[in-house]
Amino acid sequence: MTLKQVVVISGKGGTGKTVVTGALAALAKNKIMVDCDVDAADLHLLLQPVIKESHEFKSGKTAVIDKKLCTECGKCISACRFNAIKPDFVVESFSCEGCSFCTRICPAEAIRMQENIAGEWFVSDTRYGTLVHAKLGIAEENSGKLVAKIRQVAKEQATAQKADYIIIDGPPGIGCPVISSLTGVDLAVIVTEPTLSGLHDAQRVIETASHFKVAVMLVVNKYDLNSEMTLNIEVFCKEQGIPLIGRIPFDKEIVNSMVAGKTIIEYVKGKTKEELVSIWEQIKQ
Ligand code: SF4
Ligand code: SF4
Image (tube, rainbow, N blue to C red; front, side, top):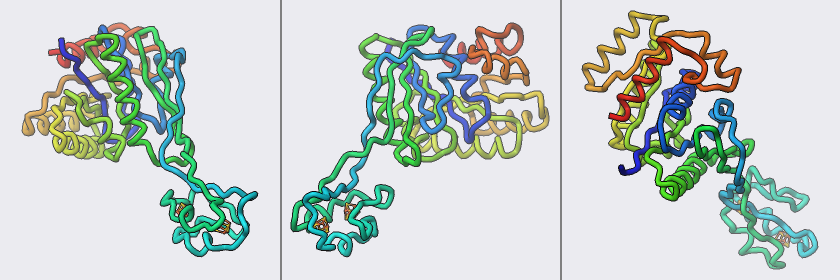
C-alpha cells in the first residue's frame, strides 16, 4: 500500500490528543511516529524512546564581532536599524534580525554571520517502532520550520523502512507549526472535549485543515462529562459532513496510564480501549 500520513490535532492543548496518538501508535502496524509538538513534546513520555541519532537544528543567522579585528569605529552601531549592536561592540543575539548589513559596512571586516542553533531533532527506537522527535531551544520561534524538518526526516525513514503509515502527534492551536504538520497529510483526526470552547477550537482547526484540503474526522474525549454539548458536536458534525469516529469516556485510568508511561491500549481494558480500537479501524478504512 502507498504511504498514508495521519495527523492528530486539537484546537488547543490538554484535550487528550497525545493519548489518542499513543493509542494509534500501539495499534497501527508498520508505521513511523512523529511528535510535532516541538514546544512541549510529551509523546516520548508514553513511548519512552531510546535515542539513536541526534542532530542540531540550525535556523537563521546572527552577527558576531571579532574583538581582535574591531577598531571600535562605531559604524556598525549606527548602521544597525534593529539596535542590536551595543556600545561595547557586542551583538545582542535576540535583537539581531540576521540581515547581515553590518558585515558589509564594517571597514575592518570584523563581523561575520553565524548560524543559530535553534534546537535538536532525534531519531529514536521505541517498542512500537521509529519515533522522530525534536526539542526547540528556549525562546526560539522557529517551531514551524522544525516541524517541517522532522516531517521530512520521518518521510525518509518511512520510505527506507517501507512503512505503511506515518502517525503524527500535531502541535496544539492553529498557528504556523500546525500548518506545517497539516501540509501533505492524508487525514487529520481532531480531538476535542465537549465544551463550548472545545467546539470553537475544533471549528477553527477544521477550517485550517479544509483550507489545506485535508480530510478531517472528529473524536470527542470525555464525551460523558457533558452529554448536551456532545450532542451539539454530533449535530455540528452531521451538518458539516464530518465523520465523528469516536466518543472516549472520562476514565481516570487515562491519567494513570500516562504516569505509568504506557499507552492506553497497553494499560486498560473495557470501553475506553474498545473505543480507541474502533477509532483506528475507522481511520484505516
Ligand atoms: S564597524 Fe567593524 S570595526 Fe567598526 S565598530 Fe563595528 S565591528 Fe568594529
Ligand atoms: S545582522 Fe543586521 S540586525 Fe544583526 S547586527 Fe548586523 S545589521 Fe544589526
